[in-house]
Length: 126
Image 1 (tube, rainbow, N blue to C red):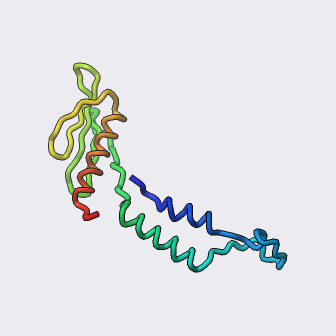
Image 2: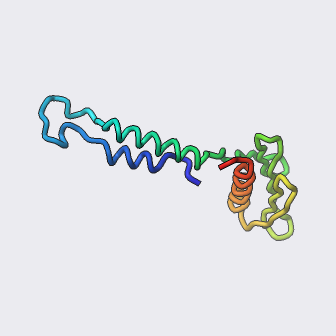
Image 3: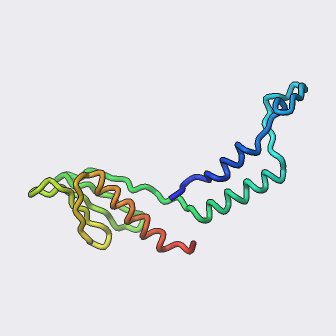
């Protein structure tokens, strides 16, 4: 998922020019200028990108006593990750109490983030 106005930033770099670009020696070579039509185009691109690419907060993890990694969401529900005592895998319990098994803590956290983003997107009218 894009979280920055990537296309708008590319367009700014493409449309920006300075007096040096035209060999104008008026002492204003350090100023960068964007044409008004280009600026309007860039604003429209950024608006569209913002509409179609909302930034979803990253889950924040805390380590509880007992070795459980917990992340509380803004909805008052949590993701919980604990290490299996039997095989060293990591067990992820998501907000629906679904259990999945992962080889590493990072894989479990990535799975939790993906699940969280999926659930948030289901609430949006894109």
